[in-house]
Length: 341
Image (cartoon, rainbow, N blue to C red; front, side):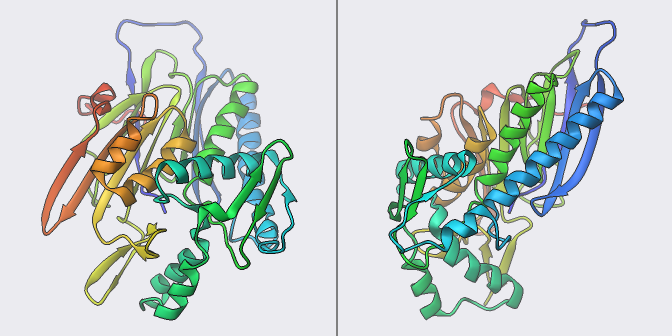
């Protein structure tokens, strides 16, 4: 779903502080992917306790939003589709669905979490290396439509209007989990942290003695080193592309990112990076920009406060790079040493 990003930190010259918090790092598989947590804490015991709480939070959210877990809250909701029954849902699921619908409306359906039935067919296609059956694909596409989600925020309920609908939160859930974990760590007194969910990266305050978290933007090719670096604090960056997840059928390469409007995996090789004030936005907007392309996608990004994007495409054997207006605000010189890699 997501591509790898390289993490480093950059030092602020001339700044020294006695008894700075120590740096600790933890890695664990959550949501079916490696989650990396880097945090600064006064001692090992408090760091370990914070990390345990963080991973427990991610596990809890996965139990709410996973479409792989049959008994997740999301899957229980999907079983009520077409019954005419509004369902009371948790704050987390209500928030993620509400934000998903907001982006669906802004992007004219380029981002749509009701794409689940189509995504299921493309997952099978990647395993069997066969194109989805035309009739099955048409039937699945008929179930896609964000307007068939009815949310009553004051009541805290969600109703899925069409029988057979399947919600897939793969384009937003990881980003939301990262934001929630950063908030949890702040509540526990951990002011400076980074959470990396397989390339979805959110950061809080800058590390002690440093100007921010230096992050290398993942390149188009999986084996390449990053050529652009950014420095962030209290922000997020996500890169989506087909470097790792794709299938080649009859000589054509199909991305795991599906256009909800056509039901077909994207065929333009691209890597889309979005910077935003939180990871929920960055995660979901990479999918919308991937589908819309640079021109329409950047128009969407310009509406996001502080938002920026980079698109790298390989079309007809040549590489094209597109930068949104605010990207230059985040770029820094190439890294000199990989102190925090």
